[in-house]
Length: 343
Image 1: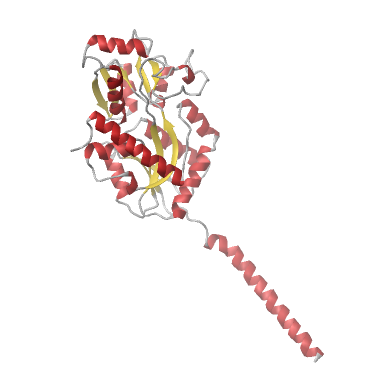
Image 2 (image 1 turned 30 degrees about the vertical axis):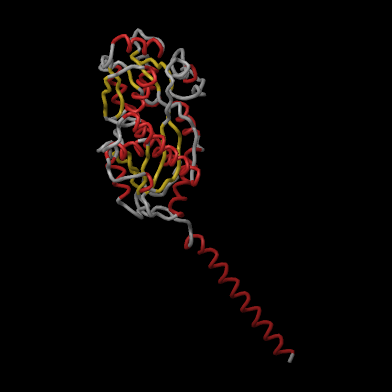
């Protein structure tokens, strides 16, 4: 009996040890076998706007940070698809249902393009990932302009009469023209609005004096401002930008007054967000949420935010969806007032 008893104990011990090895081996394999999703081929990063503008600059900067810090194993390939005021890019993503290897950076043409053109697209046709920031708009003139303040410039526009002064912006019936109409309604002025493909081109046109003013984003005109070629008159927001480091020899972003301070009671901020195709899984969405969170935590991103004078609000999940719903309604109202809704 004793011998049998020992044999049973030994057999039990052997089975326990064997089971332990199996469990350990399974545990070693489990992380790779059941790891969270990640891309298995190159990821296309769509920009629904032209080169040189704010969306293009931000997308390429995000790409650079991801490469520098090795945040993705697969390449991130930037592609501009600006046709139809961004409709080309949005429809491309919409039509790749369930494709996790495609992301898109959005601006407010996410709302304005379908409303203005009637193109069969809505932001709900994609999967919201992350609000990266909100972008400001600044009223710019050429540095050689005699107008030192927004109040002086608006007075000059009024004195010149309707449709005499040229306001440049990106696209037709998009953010820049909507904002221009807002300025006209708030001040009783009337501009000739001239559309260009991107904010970079708008800044060049203003430096060349082919237009009298623009409502460009800070990042789209900062190089020309720093070089003394452009003058910033006011920012279209409720508060001044918080950045106090000098950008030019004499001015920081914080030195630019709000347009309301300057007698132009108009404000507008623009989305800079990332979306995916419809029909992707939560794991796939979470992968990009986490990568973009790491991007925002880098010192390079913080420096980029300050240089471009961004509002650093960021959101994901239900909060982002609620913001998008509200923003869509605001744009619909603004575009109805401007007469820009497609019939």
